Amino acid sequence: MKYVNAESIFPVELLNEIQKYVNGEMVYVPISKGSRKKWGENSGSKTYLNDRNHEIRQKFSAGIKVDQLSDRFFLSRDSIKKIVYSKK
Image (cartoon, rainbow, N blue to C red; front, side, top):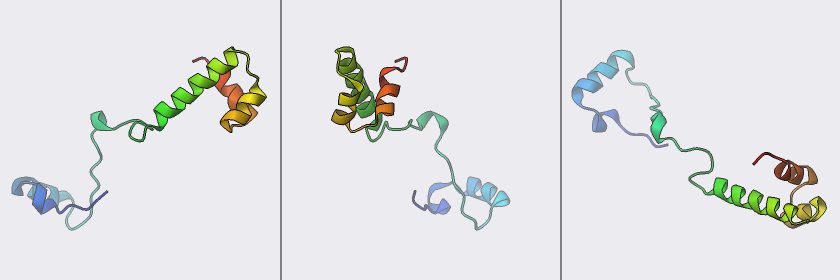
C-alpha cells in the first residue's frame, strides 16, 4: 500500500468535505467489494492446490495407498486422508 496525497487525486470540493471529518490525518480507503480477489487468485496458489488435490484423489481411486501418497506429495497421512475423504 502506498501513500497518495489527497490534493493530487480529489477535487477541491471533495477535499474540503473530507477535511470536515479528518484534517491532517492518514485515512485508509479500502478496495471496493466487487474488485477484491479471493485467496490464491493472484498468485495461482488456489489453482495449484486444487490441481494437486485432484491428482491425489485420482491416484487414491486408482489404488495407491495413503502412505505412498503421503511420501510422494510430502504431506502428512492426515492431510492426505482429509483430501481423499472430502466431499469434492
